[in-house]
Image (tube, rainbow, N blue to C red; front, top):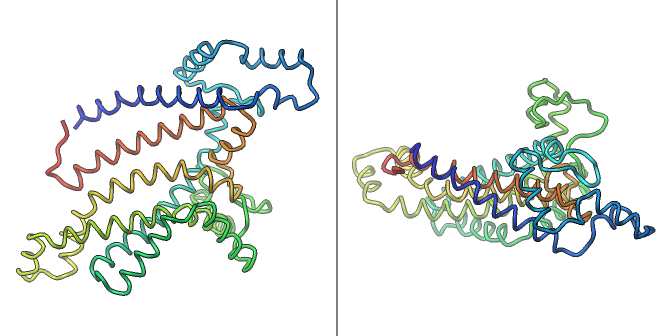
Length: 334
């Protein structure tokens, strides 16, 4: 196992190197001059040239990339063109908001998706099965931004149950410890902040979870149907083992193996998919700053944020692979 983990970790650097090069080239070949956007329309050629020199944009592309790569290896992701702050410090500040949204979305997707998938498999071809699979297909098919706008229109504008944007009402004071507002509210015993942070979180999390819910439900149903038809399940039932024990001890655990793969991939996608959701709900996380930085051509911020998301995606996939051996002792890595 340790040898396998070491091999996987050794692959991380080449993957991140390729990702950094692709992001760098896309950003630099995209239309728009960061210096011109920074200065505005009323700018002289002399001022433009001066700012380009300060930003390092007058150097050849390969020099710029090597300089960026050298700094990234040292843990320095550069300075934002607009905030003049360290990109790494900005990402550290914004990261908890994105993590909180992604984790909340995954919790919703797991609770609803796995429950619906298991019940649909046990009640195959029933009304519940047909309805839940149609809903799951709809969840997979609907764009996240459209779902977010519909939820906002119904629950915020029409019913007034939830806020439109942000993470916490400005009049509520919360001592930040982890940066995760729900956790911080629980730790500090701030009930008002907990209630308000959940009201702000529910719509973005539900919107982001719709696709993952549908995918997890369909995979869980398919995997459960395959497992409950196996000989060892029929043998357990023939021995008089209770149905609940057969389903949850024997069938469910074995059905989880392919589901875990999907869950791991979906969690990585949730971090990336948060870009759209955070923009719709003005959620102050990494996804929101990526969109703003792309429009501003803030190269260091975009490159740093996407590199961080790529690193998280690779790590999550490694953890998913390692978890297989715990779910199924027959699986061994070399």
